[in-house]
Length: 496
Picture 1 (cartoon, rainbow, N blue to C red):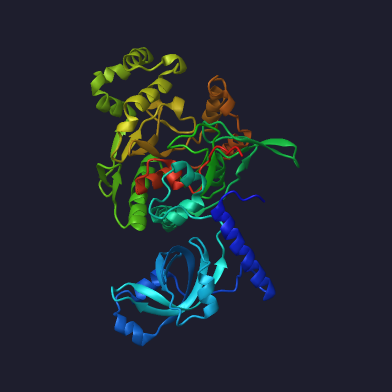
Picture 2 (tube, helix red, strand yellow; picture 1 turned 135 degrees about the horizontal axis):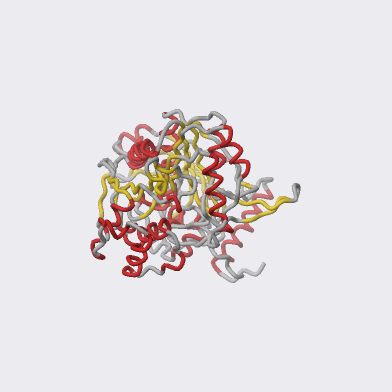
């Protein structure tokens, strides 16, 4: 192997020496027999308030391990999962061999140390080292600690490096874990059962999206990565599981943006003998609960200037009401939304190319997206979606063209989508067939015979919802890109 970087070559040479020494002693250059009994944050919590004199008298011996982040004279700073701690190397205490070995240790190396907890005259906690061992030799130098990693591309592509160098990034993913745990806690306390449904589907369904296609060699059939678990979860409701939820990975073979990644995490839950209004109540409470559990507060920031308190009641507007409210600059009045002809006139006024929106529902929804969506900064439920854009939702009893559906927006983006479920098998079959005739989406719609068969056995009145976990975490951590809350976002392959 030709090593171009001289710093890497120096470290490789040091590793060769380590291997030779270890081999002579019948050991490995990458040992796995060191055990620590403390992490840095626990030591700081336990001894941080004690005086130097108390620690000298206490003589508390412990073992720590972590990555070297700084070397300065007799001091070494190591970083573990929780924080960092300073080690003090006194050559009068350690062996001559260890003192010699330490000189060859580099920033980035992973070491273990045993010693006594003490404090400097300035009050900084440190470990007075008695024994220390190199556990993993780092071949590649870390970025400069002061400058860190500025290039976003590098941060996303080499997330492990980003995690090493940036405490803030580690905290974001700690919040991510806590968000998912708190969602589970919230739903478990309401007697929802967590379930698992297939990721490989023989028929894609549950959402209008282009699927990823794969192939099963054993069955000799084309299969699709899940775009949504909805139809499987509703089969479980038919089977008598009245409250179910799944936190799952979905896959949609579509565009990548700051709010879209082809692989993403969703919460979907279904609740028998409930409707969309019940879902709105539970969603509002869940988001408050999650914020309190993960952040310790319901107050969050959107960007640099906007503050939101999630403890305040969420707004609620119908789609028509929201267009009139936020369309004042276009002088929109209620009668402008009465029929397709008037919508076409309105669309031309606001610059929408109408060729792709040939019916009332599609056009009304597009007008909403253009005029309203990005203005919904405060948590807002938008209700009364047209049936044309809600193929799985129950229509309102008094108006079959409008559905019992809502979407929740925070920070100008959709966070959740829920509705009273359509459980009339004849109407559901009719909607499947109608959508299959539409040229713009015919490649994304399949007639699911087995789902219709399940509905024929009878599904109780049910409400169901999907919540974008990644987007919710973006809101709670005030991040503008979905890539900031995914460990490994999809990236274009590097040409080597």
